[in-house]
View 1 (tube, one colour):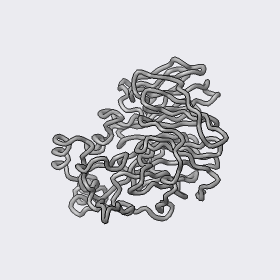
View 2: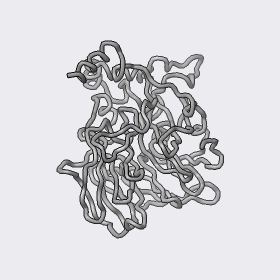
View 3: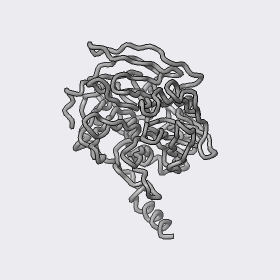
View 4: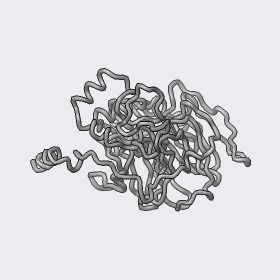
Length: 369
């Protein structure tokens, strides 16, 4: 009863979850042009994930898994390692202690182990519920941790999941040795990104703009919240801490639309997703797209401080999950829709779905801790 009254009060006063305000990009998140200035080393229009074992890279590009071998001149040599029967939506390189090989999510609905001692094992469900939108996989001391973004919308329908206020995501632990699957958390607002952090599991909960820890308690505990965008994958940094990707930024207009059910229902029913008032992974492609309020070109120039319909952002976190720095491709740039950032051979490789390419940045040249 108290929770219902509190929710009603927030709606009337525009507070709490009913507020349309958006945190500003400042402090450790102060905008730069580092991502925009990075050089692409591999083009991949259908790429979805990028992982590394510290020496090699593997890229999920459409139905293919591509191995990328870094060269001395900074370029990469690519070869197709595997071709599946549906788009590959997530990857993970298994450590030798777990038998090696790769974990591959196919179509968001099946997770397969390829190569290594456990090669051939596969999962299509957990706790009697089928996988629908597997979007991230991480290795832990006792198996694999998987985020299943939604029980209703597949990986390509993430905008629909946001616009329908989806909260059916879950996190699952898989045991490659026995084939068992255990649900660690459910009813998450689009789980997209997992990482093992000691005895806990960190999860990116995109639609609540936060990273939470799953431990022994009944409820997830916030590690990092009130983010200005929608977080996704987490990967460890060699010097400690983490790299967190943010695939799109929030705007006041989208926050307002999310609080208008009648408008959202009509928009979803009558318009194609690329014309919705919703975040995108890439800059505007058509004059029919909404202007996102202040996103208007003046004198032929789209101002970098305009509301971001799409954006490129990677956040550097310390071991406790506090932001210490960030890399940006601002409004008007190309390298947007960042969904993966991994370290390999003294460089940071970043996957931009908006630009359809893998970017390379020298770690020694990044002025962030």
